Amino acid sequence: MLTILDHLPAGLLDLEAEQLSQILEGSTLIHLSGQQDPPLFVSVLLHGNEDTGWLAIRRLLGHYQDQRLPRSLSLFIGNVEAARHRVRHLDHQPDFNRIWQGGDRPEHHMAQQVLDQMRQRGILAAIDVHNNTGRNPHYACVSHLDDACLHLASLFDRKVLYLPRPVGLLARAFADLGPALGLECGLPHLTNGTQHAHDFLEQCLQLDQVPAHPVDPDAVDLLHSVAVVKVPADVRFGFAPPDDHPPDLALDLVLRQALDDFNFRQIPADTVLGWAQQGIPLEVKDPLSGADLLSHYFYAEAGQIKTAIPLMPGMLTQDERGIRQDCLCYLMERYLMERM
Image (cartoon, rainbow, N blue to C red; front, side, top):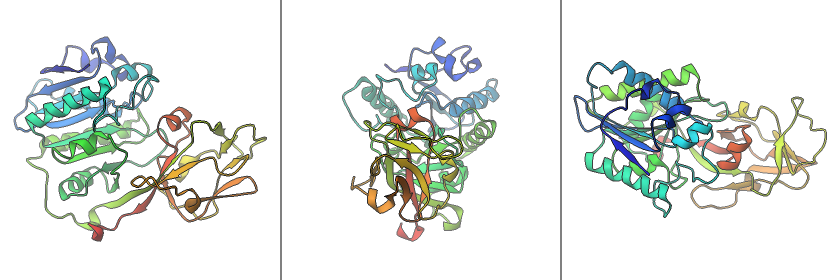
């Protein structure tokens, strides 16, 4: 299931993400030698509809086509089949960013092969490039709060999200090998996201080492996930018309328009998020313990779903398939550096 190469196939850098299956048979790990070792590991297209990582690395490697890379690079191109269809993952596939910590499916074994390869080679750092399906600022995700991870994250953006769950994240698995980040670069295929990711990857290639001294608390705006909000599989849901006044409640749950306006903003208690025929048809859980937190964050009043306390959501989206395959959003709080 995994192809391992030591060169870029001819014509690969000319292709868009959805065309990669013309050359690649599936998930591919490409080792490229450079002036320094160990390599920088870069993962793109774990989710097939998130193309910024591919666009950024394509631009970067195009620049170095006639010269040696400043550092060796190991490039993992993830879900080529899903990229062909421009979806997060196909219905018969697992999420490729949930397969990195064990399991019995072929995809789990493929992920273990990648980890074994990089454990043998060592890494300077691991960078996994993603997009959001809703409008969000750019930010880095870390699963460990060590100084090297936070230094690396701060080179990308001040906003850093501590995300130790869910299980199976690539960055979480690679953190055992070295500093590891997920980059969230906004919506797919936008120039500013591609440029931001490209510039960061270029900067990483130029590093002699990742700094490991204590991080200045002013250098990062550190957040952590305190709840995951999902729409249960048996709940029929959709979005309200533009005036945010649903004409009827034929669905179990109607969410307000432009929910992603709230991303990374503190919204007050009593904010209306949607409407429901009965109760609150959402699942809200602590990402670590799995405890039910629904009543702590939301309440129902006269058919409306409202926030019970001030809260800060992230990754809110209006992509219904994305909500089904992942979640509606995360709820976040600021994480004081003193806790570290």
